[in-house]
Image 1 (cartoon, one colour):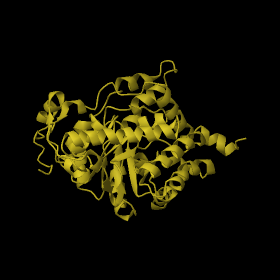
Image 2: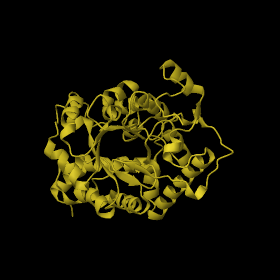
Image 3: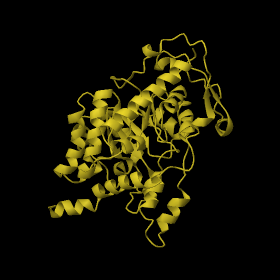
Image 4: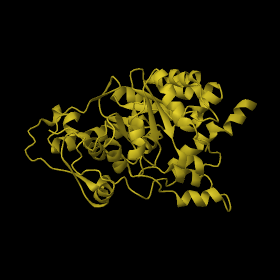
Length: 377
């Protein structure tokens, strides 16, 4: 039987996280817009002169070698019913050599209840060698909440994280009925505190992407990089609207549907960001296979991430996660084989052609089609 304190937390952050996952698994939460990766095409190389089995998909991120450039992007934690999802992903990350981000650790900082903290701690227990990324919300760094260095250290130590993502999600928060919309002061706080944090700190969007202007701000800061979190995957504005779909005459439900597809498509957010930034870029937001990830890397990403595909697989079991990851890796290797790339560094240099909507966007934003920030082979 739950204690009174546990009952209270179920109505707060922890329960909200569970509700989010239920919606993602049961409802249509995708953006109606695409990532625009379909506007970018590889140039096929008939004379590839490679041994397929020798193609190397490994990368090094923050000093940690991964067997493939893939992150199980931040999803969950903080409720006992989601612990099994984290367990399955962590076991697969340890076995197959991909990275993993946990969901917002706010619940663990708000309430020191064992079942909440254990839903996070179990990740490191089961994946002792994996690259793990912690997760806190930008709004909690604003003047209203003002997370302390001690709280940040607790979040990092909880999973022995090698990096910390600060998620910036103004679109989601302004539609969420309990949302924290007081972001004032968060950016100055994070810039000031980042040098004293013992792991690299990045900013992470959750579905609306980063503009060139915001990427330039990160470039000129002590932060280590960006997780794009672009438009084209799960719409967290849409998820918040769906939480209210049974509320009659709900103002936020109506507005959430209006802003469902707000943001910058992932591929375009990536080229915008890479045009002004030489720090770590993680491409998340609607990536569904290894071919799409290969294109994102060719456009400037250091690594790609997926969330909803991992969530769906993890809810079915470990076997499904392993199938997802092995399929992703083989799709990536085939894309590399057909473009003559022996490793990920080659993939970052391979020619890629842009057309359609993305070409028009890049023209309007004065981003060169030749993408001069990329190394030339």
